Length: 287
Image (cartoon, rainbow, N blue to C red):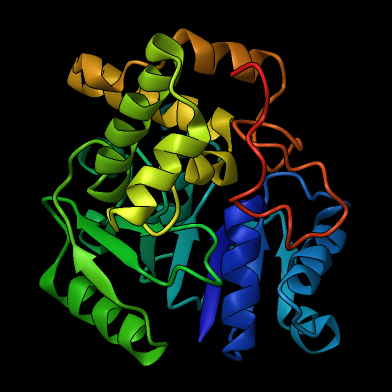
């Protein structure tokens, strides 16, 4: 299969490495070619102990949408800005007819984005969860014009590569992020307003088998800046105060305490061993 990826950020790199491992031909598009993209892709492969010499020759880079011709599936993972997404999706749909176009947004409205797509019967939401090497579950979110044939083709493709999936309604954040962000907001309010420690919250939910990883451990891994953006997006779309970010979260992001990526969030992750830097480390001070 030939797979197109719009954007070369973390999610696109995870998708590229995984599908290259399946033997797929990958084309990664950016409007402007990024000189550091191949090195970042190599680092992504090495992080998951994959052989770059085997995988990287299957991944090409382009700044021309026409190079995505022949792709069976194109996954968009660019900046979470509806105006930017609409511009790129509109251009793509006019240049590359036939391919299934999937938007990997974590919180934006698929029906709204579909208005920019020429031939929206081949457009839908396809939400990959991070880290993809460990979490293979996908959410499929059709728009009102997504055709039964598009859904059938996508289901068959995902089954071919062993992905479990569910079709979900077009609610802000789909199901996973909608529920997760409500839980994260509640946990953060307990830390901010009641002085409950992150470790206690995470331990309680893990020991009760409510979650495998504690919610604040998950927040650190996702990135607190990402959590802030998704909460703001869902709160803006729903008007639901349950999703309103805490002042504590805004302060942590402003201070650069983003979680695993920065070395400190609700937990300290500034350790040399990559395994030790995963969720479950010592709680950070001053949250």
